[in-house]
Amino acid sequence: MPDVQNGIHLLVGEPALSQGQLRQKRAFDVLFGTVGFVLLSPCFLLGCVLAKVQSAGPVFYKAKRVGKDEVLFEMYKFRTMVVNADKIGCSLTTYRDARITRIGRFLRWTKLDELPNLINVIRGEMSLVGPRPEAPIYVQHYTSAQKQVLQVKPGMTGPSQLANRHEAEKLKARANPEHYYITELMPKKLAVDLHYVATQSLAADFGWLLKTFRVVVFGR
Image (cartoon, rainbow, N blue to C red; front, side, top):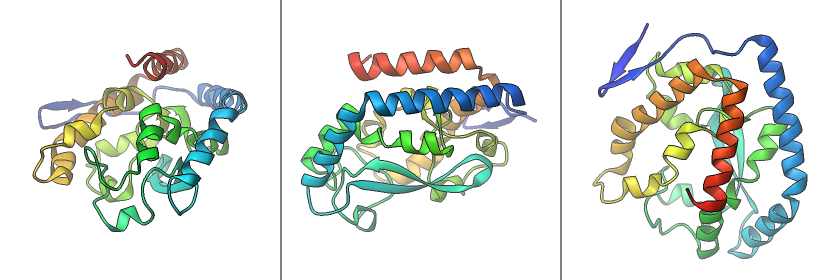
C-alpha cells in the first residue's frame, strides 16, 4: 500500500533484488570494499592521525545506527567532535556546530571522516550503496511504510546521501532543528530512500558510486 506524508508519495513493497542478485551485491561490497580499503589506506592513516591529534579522545566515533531488519550496529567514523559531544548538544550536527573541532571540519569537508564505514561494509552491516543509516532516536518516528527502507542494508552512499550532503546548511536558522528534521527533512529523505529500495539494481548502484566519486573529487 502506498503512503503519503507532507505531499511526498512513498513507494513501498518488496525489495527489487532477487536472492541471487543480493548475493552478487554482497560479493561486490566485499570485493570493492576491501580494494577500496587497501587503495585508500594512506588516506585512512591520515584520518587516524588527524582524528587523534585534534583533541584528547579516541580516533573512532562509534555511532549507533539501525540496520537491515531493524538490527542495531555501531557505525564507524573518524571522530570530528570534542569528546562526549552527544551529551552537550542535540543528536543532529547543525550548521557551524561548535562541537566540531577545526581538524574535524577538514575531515568532514573532505569526507575522510566516513572512510571507516568501509569496516562496516566488509563486516556486512552496511553496503557500499543503500539508504542512509539512521539513528534509533529518529527511526522511532518512522511510519510502517517508511520502515520499508529497513528491508535492505544502509549504504555508505546513495541517492539520499548525495542529495543531502549539505544537510547542516538546511538546518541553519531553524528555531528547532530537530523538529524540522523529523517533520520536514527526514520524510523527504525517506521518500528518496524508498524509491531506491523499490527500483534498485546492481547497475544503478555502480552509477551511484561513480556519482559519489565525482562529487567527492570534483565537488559536483
